[in-house]
Image (cartoon, rainbow, N blue to C red; front, top):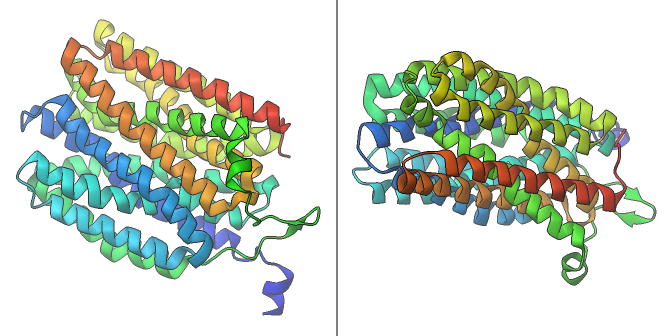
Length: 407
């Protein structure tokens, strides 16, 4: 007890590792939707818009549940909150395995699984990591925790493709549900605990709430909302449509799945590397490099139908990793730095909600534009616009907060 009192962050390394392992599985399962999406469109014959709507509804549920989860985390801690979230995920995936229609999947995957992912998602998890670390360590810690998303893609996208081959897509959903029950649930319940009490800074408690009227009058708060909306929308648009897009350009699904897996591996390295860059040189530097990478990924997709070679997809994997590996981690780190007095759970839960809303609208709009025009060009241009908007809003917050570097 004395040692814990002297060193309140003693358990921080374990918390970060548990968060990373949990995110590895949760988002590995989440990113495997790109394989299911290709199955729905190319095998079941469903439209791009209708298939993307399943994912988009789930992200709308993320947008609603993540802020509520953040508030609950500030009050109750991670064990009961994340336990509920994993149970909802498992139930949604299990019911998806019994689905016969798109409506069934909208209810099971869209609503139940979506609420579960919102509760256990990046924003709520970031609040736990941020609560266990100091601002000078926060970028690296969140980067390490979020590195699980890339590794999850590396493992679960090819694994899901194999499961669908062996058991069809319904059987694959049941296997993923069992992984949630027997691996993720005990990991998060046993391995996590509430962050230590916040230290005091300049005579004010870091956990003190900012009045809503004061918060809503701050332009940088609304800029943060814009960043949240446009941070993950572009990434998830590519995540959902990338395999179907590659197949439409003549790339075999197994090759496309391997490219996505490679991007996942590189994403994990980018999360860790740019966490260090963020702490050393500032959040804006890391975020800008990632945004440039995401624009490069879009360029590679534009070139793919013309060149028709899988070689274009290798730089795509690198560019995508730069984008994926910086956007969520840098956004939550910046939110924690600037708005920590609002409550880490609440502000990061709100970011998780904005991530979910942007990720709901992006893939759905890309699918709709694809169905109406017959090409992905309009959807890819929309991705570019969202990336540019996120850069402007992120830079505005940094300038208004004087956060040139966090070292």
